[in-house]
Length: 419
Image (cartoon, rainbow, N blue to C red; front, side, top):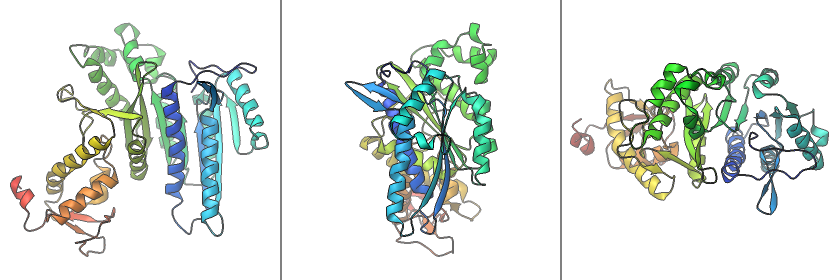
């Protein structure tokens, strides 16, 4: 992240905010999770991947009395750790081919980063698999996309777009990434509170707002929500729906990182084209539960982004702790019966993947939580699980994406619900 941070050769690095430290930890963890997930096939011997840090900064910060690595070094080290683990676990070794693009529009930031990389021993890799470029991200993107496409047809790529504010990454840029590549994932930070403070009818036609495709009427509608308690949540919801719909990602994960030092909330938006990517990011939120929250309920359709409802009613802050997990499991148990009933009237059953993919976006629910609750309902006789080959699964603890869910002939819970 650049923006409020500034790096210059010969000067001490900037002080790192706690919210930025949280994001860097998330980025590092997700790289490890991602590579572990896409290399689980035992016969696989190679992976092509491109990692793009679109707002890389100088790569070093001060935190208290020590210096800490920024996102470029943390991403490099994450890949090195996974590469070592893969090499040790595979008898024939593993060829992990990862290219890195570190991009920043400020020359003195790039000079600082190049010097840092050389001091850390990465000098021989510059221009080979580590590419450092001074340019606005959107200007550098076409060359990055062309490089990714030249590496094969899978286009596996992770874009870490840690913008300082909310307008440096245009929505059309995210659509370009998603439309140009087969398997990209975008992790975008978005300073939603800063945007809310910026909004007024007088700023309805600025380039910054045009980048996120807000016109004068959109701004008027959003600022019209400034009424009564909880108005900031209402505007956040309106903005979220707007960005979600225009980004063009089939799967997305919107959660908040609250900045204690800046007294502002940031969104961390994960955008992808594949159900598995959405699931892995959801699991990461639960593992790093001290960083994330969302405002809403605990089950499916939980974030409250519904223009017909006032989300200030029954508002909860969801912290991904043990209590939140218990509430999530309880909510899913109550929600699943009518969902399955509605989808299985024609007798074909509800495919587990369809159930998850069709409901996973606006929710903290992961495949692990869903699977556990499906097993409970099966064991209590409330549903039947049929495998892809047509055989029943009366006792299996593992539920596959290709399994189908059916209503049993006799069911107490469904009957009590009136189905």
